[in-house]
Length: 279
Picture 1 (spheres, helix red, strand yellow):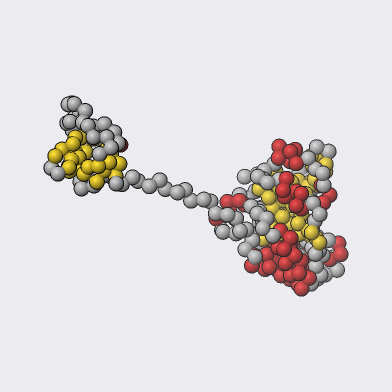
Picture 2: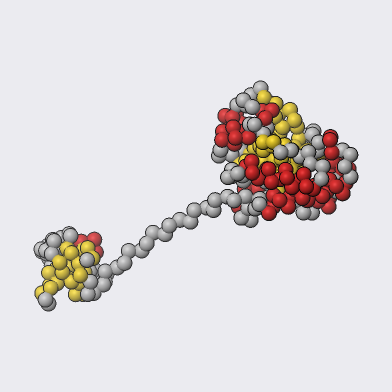
């Protein structure tokens, strides 16, 4: 599969939501950064219901304690929101350039542990340079899904060995005059996530089976609510008795009027099932 997907944040306040709906079925929302909620999250989320939505958190964490704090804030901010796409850590800020590769790896792992322990499908977003040169991308990629930024006409080369589900190919896609980041989604995340029981999604409702009506049987007490016949074959005079309470004394399978009813050994007549109401 290959589905167009936008990612939006506070910078897209006032965007034309109808135009988003006309173009995509997938959208990833910035939930926040550092320990601050994105001020457009609720607006974007509420106006894009019906699309497959994901969320990301832009990190400024410089150690694992700060990473865990940000991850907990991420979960607090999204609350009961429902996402059919992953929750991502966005790690790329220039303020983190001075951190060692091992520290950056530890930040990713600490953040991811909180998100996964919260019952969510976790992924990592970064650009190709960070994946290859700042982080141990290939090692982390064995554990986490990836959303990779590599702007241009061509996706990351297979030689890089990245197993990614989302490729961000531009930051300049025009949506009714608003500039947005655009991506392609390659994995069926809604199905993957639902099948894995993640993201606290409501299970598909189980259809309520239609109960099979209990068949009438010999000995049942019934009320006659329709006309019958003097013969099980239906070739004699119509039997009387509407409103009477009687008992089924015999069943003539395969005949037009199979239910023979009577009282005190006196036959009232023969009836179809719909003419009898079990008491």
